[in-house]
Length: 447
Image 1 (cartoon, helix red, strand yellow):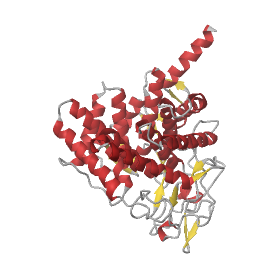
Image 2 (cartoon, one colour):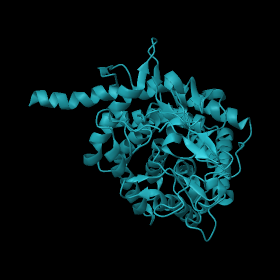
Image 3 (tube, rainbow, N blue to C red):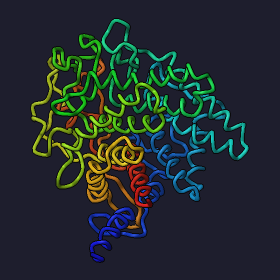
């Protein structure tokens, strides 16, 4: 019995401290190791090399910065983490209180998540000037989304849903819930009551509606997965990739890993902040359990990770024929499906956080999350000679259309062969979620 108790207690500790390729390494706290290896240094953002302190305003550097800030919140003695994110924010603001964002471009909002922690910390330190700049920019971004962002037209299914971008009219993508709705929720949590209870309540309803719309139209109850995107106007030229007939009219053809990763992460982030007495809270709890239950079915039994295309394993290949659009062939290769690091990290993060905040059942999902975290370490994390880390095997980018880019078809061929869908390493879209998954795992190990 004593031997069993020892094993029960020590194994979680060893995993939390770290294991690369099955070898324990008790000196590593992986959130800090990844932050110091890549987050504070250089990383890829859509194939471009970035350094955080001087990175451009974009959701990828913003995601890395947000994860580094989360690492500081959990390990406040690491002040260099906080200072680096503040440097990034100040670099982007250039002494002002707004950043340049595209018209109805939901991706341009997500980096604003860093402003809430920066605001509260600078106010605590008595630096009201910087704090107010951060608040003004966050408010500018929130108001641009709530009042000026294009929404699905009245009279169409999903009316009121935020466009993913202006160039994708009447389209919602799973990615956009992390970029827009989750940022919106952070603003409401920090400042919403300043505008009164009525406005705050209506804003939370607006946030919830975004999830309810996209889940209604993209969730396949039989496969228990969400299609990457949905168009309320599938006949539009920019929605050439959309299914034209029921069932799932308007949906893209496949279930993309990172798309569902953004969605799962957005759900737990919003539910952490959403008032539990909001009438839509239980609806979002049901949705997050739909997602959690479905993804559990597709976790690779051997590695604990998930594939780029969720419903297949590595026996699925692109067909080497490609996609013919207007007489031109795109996406021609014979590459196989592969375990993908950014999606696997996002799922791990969302499972762990969902259990911590009480919206996912611990008994049911804890074995999945533990296996997933060990899978991240064994499958995707490699070490350099100096001890620094890499995170490998992540999808560089993926999207759908618009009409001017017929190569982005949303097919199996596209997600495995597309010109923008290359496999890379040290991509910010994998670094940030890995840091956040590690933080959740380390937090759980301390309990």
